Length: 130
Image 1 (cartoon, rainbow, N blue to C red):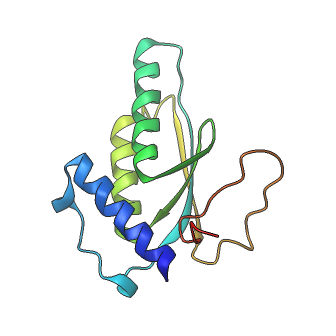
Image 2: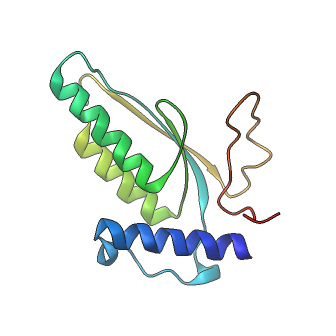
């Protein structure tokens, strides 16, 4: 599938830009199983430290997916990337005041997501050229 090839290229570029290519297992076409993961967070921003945590969480999520609402991201991840992102976010948040949720929709997600209104999602596995 061309959608998967474009996704893999985008992920490799993101890994290269972030400078953490060696932190990931190699990608091998059909061997990699991607799943839709919905990430939501609620960070307490009463203090300046909370505002900093909010920016850091959002920055990490942007590296892995697309923002669909203020504190909600849709990410297409393999199991290793999902664990890595969870670990990174866990180190950022304050477990006493913040909340972080991962919803795993798997790779059969299109029948499980319904969108109404503006800003429809673009799924990275879909063709970019129509």
